[in-house]
Image (cartoon, rainbow, N blue to C red):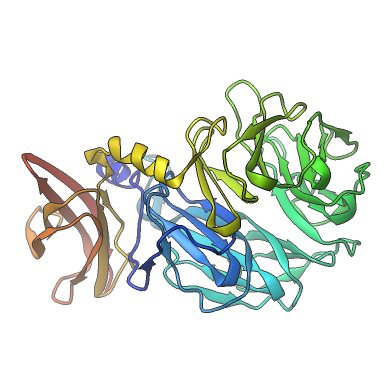
Length: 443
């Protein structure tokens, strides 16, 4: 593929939100989980069927109508490249490629919903169970796992369209599942599940079979993570934090003065050490920078329970919780600020590069598609479509627009199949900015 195309695919992709409405924070609904797609795009889920999405790093959130009132406990994203056409191994090129995303949310009464169009539409997936589902993990599009109450473990190999039951040999509620990163030298993935009553399940065959481990605790374990090196850590009630450095065979207690509930934990993959952050009761954040052996209590200034946290990278993260609580960090979890403070900081650093021109959807298309984009400021906007020879084939828009998310439709009924380019030009004051993306018309 030409360099022009490679550069285009580095942009963050955002899609239309015609059915979305702005959600005015704060809210009284509990927010139970958050997942990142990119540095700016994330979804959070919670009470009463709540699904919310941000495409600007958390400054603004939009409600996605789920059509249900079930409590959602978990969410996950997976982005992959789908290739079409002939592959040229010598030149490492393809006819064209499309970035796709699978989004999954899961919750009470066996409910799992799947979206494959950037969270625009959600389809209820038949799970065959009424047990509450507490966690969901997308390892890849053909390996999706969900765990829940009464020893429930489900696996899907078809993008979440159907599910099969995996035997766990336990009736404990299973609360969290984590997989190791793929290692080219070892085709078998390690995995860990944490559950009530000190239940720990481990797998070393890609999640096909699971064995009960001796965790040496009877406390409920609410969260578990596994690092690239295979270190496993689980945490839960009464400040319990346990770790295993031998693939789950033996477990030891970590050192912490915290005695409350640990709800969620994340592995940050620090430059020198394995760094972990965890969220808990009464606005408490825990952090370890020595491979989970010792934990420091970080006061956030908030007293609401923090049910989940997640990080896009080793520095930038969000924690969510009780009564619509959202706290933000840009230093790896050392300090946390509320939404108002975060917004003020973010607005002072807004740059022209924050203009987002998204991949048209659908793509490839026939004959109509939608182009969406995000303006961080008011601007005079023009959008034109070009063919491969650089000729203008459609003038879609010339208008003054306010900051925010916008979209425009393109109908290519009179055009022939092939590759086209759409260009957005935005003028604000004495500055002009241009973004270009590729799209494919197939008839």
